[in-house]
Amino acid sequence: MKILALDSSGLVASVAVVEDDNMIAEYTVNYKKTHSQTLLPMLDEIARMTDLDLKTIDAIAVAGGPGSFTGLRIGSATAKGLGLALDCPLIHIPTVDGLAYNLWGCKDMVCPLMDARRNQTYTGLYQFEQGEMETILPQCAVGIDEIVDKINELDRPVVFLGDGVKVFQSYIEEHCSVPFRFAPAHLNKQRGAAVAALGLKYAVAGKTETPAEHKPDYLRLSQAERERKEHEHSGS
Image (cartoon, rainbow, N blue to C red; front, top):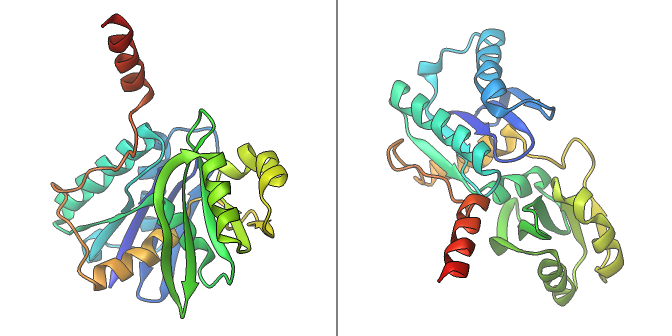
């Protein structure tokens, strides 16, 4: 089974193609360009370099949120358009799950951290048992203090990864009471290959959707929506 994966949920844009247990290609960029500028050109380059016929793709896995509102919309629109054009199903991968899957096989608890602003993080807690990823705490939007308190309560060593590490590192170092580590550079951001590999498991389990059914999970209101509600509340 051949899976095309797209992840534009955060600062990183990543495209990958995985066929069964073989990663054919991965193109990841973490630079000052918008995902609308990078995602399709990256896919075109992968297709050119690997002589990929997109009609041979069995499913498209996409990081479905949470994350950057604009990034999620770009990834979602791209996946839906490709799915319709190629007549293939989509696989909705929770962003935080995909990020955690970077650390497959880690013996410690895994805690992805995405910067959600306002001292909040998109996060979750995971462990790997007998080659399978298990969810301890499903992805959620919480304060950094809440997730660190939960980790301390579980009293287990933990590995942190994600763009939120840089933002919250000093808080973690001051307040985390269990042994902790930070993932290295090649594993600490979103990667299309992890989304594709997890997507393959979803596809085998029949967890697919049509392009029309797909929609991102934002987990919370956008800044514009929050400001509108605050304005409505103050005016009532």
